[in-house]
Structures are given as structure tokens and as C-alpha cells.
Length: 312
Image (tube, rainbow, N blue to C red):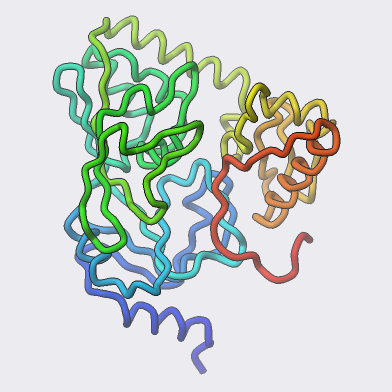
């Protein structure tokens, strides 16, 4: 007998449009995430190119949930997996082209690769991207920032495809950036961006990128299974200081731990579940609220459904 869960996956794929890219039912996602936790995608779609993505979205039944993931550096996928279709952009969306002081990039291009390519071409102002794990698509979605700069400082325009498969070109103003916020509808998928830098010396830029790498290694658990900064900084405060004052440095639930090196990072010590990591984050929020009166907002994006049974 075919399990009911498998039957539901097969049925969903049967309802989806034909594609030129890869489409897989019941696809494991944990190995794609920096936390190395989480359940499968009901269906995982890797589009061949921009036209394949647009055609799929135009023909995909509107009631089917669609979720986009990048390299999942700031993402927690719950243990029950992600219903509907998960879209992951690949190499066709990872180009980086430098012309003068303008850098045109695909949404799947790694932030660090953009900084390096710009630096090699003598384009300054994008070094901060080397300190942000992930892709430019994720950086656009959350107005990512580090080391004194944010995406709002460098974006000229961005391209996106909406849920109906219609393409849009958005100016920096239309992106409606705020602190760790972008005003573009959540179901639009970024496909490319144009960034602006300034003329600089390649050697000087390279040294700045090395400084950022050294600073990250000294202050953050960069070699651990983590999801980057867990909570956004509240106005006038630093999240890590509030967490530290609440006595949460090193706090554990199962195999999930608040980093002792930088306590705005959660760690998978090796056998954590997404449930444990999320429960630990919520316990941190509870303790910070009790000690300071401030409610921390999650910066890590959490998607999917919980698995019955809760924390071990």
C-alpha cells in the first residue's frame, strides 16, 4: 500500500505545470540549511532559468503555497517540513557582472562572491556584503546589513517575479526598505539586482574584506551549525547585550544552545531539532522580556510546520 503522505506528494506534482528545471517530491531540506535541521519540502523546484520560473508561477494553481529559499543561512525549517512548493534558485541566477562602478547580480549570487568580484574590479562600497552569509535575494528581502552599511545604501534597482508570473523592475524607493525590512510583497521572488559602488583600489578593498573576515571569526561562531543573528536589534539596544543581561549565554534546550561566543546566535550542537532551536529562541525572548521589558523580534525566518510531539 502506498503511504498516504506519499500519495499526497504524487498528487501535488501531478497538479503542477511541466518545467525545464528539476522538480522533486518529498525532498529533504535539512542538508541545505546552515542549522542542518528541518523536515522535507512537499515539492522542491529548481528552475532552469528566469523564464522557467515565470512560466511555472503563471501556471501553478493559486491555492498551492509557494516558498522561496536561498542557501538558508538565516532560516529555520520546522521539523514537519514545508507544505506546497519550495523554490530554490540555482546557478542560472548566480551571475555577477561588473561594469564601471555598477554591479549586476543574480538573486542566487552569494553575498561574499559579490564583494570579492567588486573588489577585484576596483569597486568599493560593497565590502560589507562579505560579512553577510547568504545570497543577494535574501539580503534584498531583509535589507541585510553589517559593518555600518545596509542594502538600502547600495541598491539601484531589483527585478522580481510575482505569484502570477509577471516580472517587475523596482527602484530602490519602491523596495521600501526599513530596518531588516523590505516592503515588496512576500510572495514576489527576487531574481536579480543592480548595485552601485564607487571607484577604489583593489588592494585596499581586499584588505578590508580580510579585516571583516577576521572580525567575524573572532566574534561569531562562524564554523558552527548556526543561523546567523537570531534577533533584530531593538531601537536603541543591541540584542546580544539584552540576551546576555538576561542570563542566557550558554543556555541549552536539548542539543540547542545559545552561543557563548556571541549570544545572539543559536547553535545546533550536533543533534538538535528545529523544535528545540525554536523553543530555545522563545525562551530567550521570554527571559529578555522579563528582565528588560523589551520583546525581541526574530530576525531568523521560520517556515514550515511543527512535528507532533514537541521538544524531546
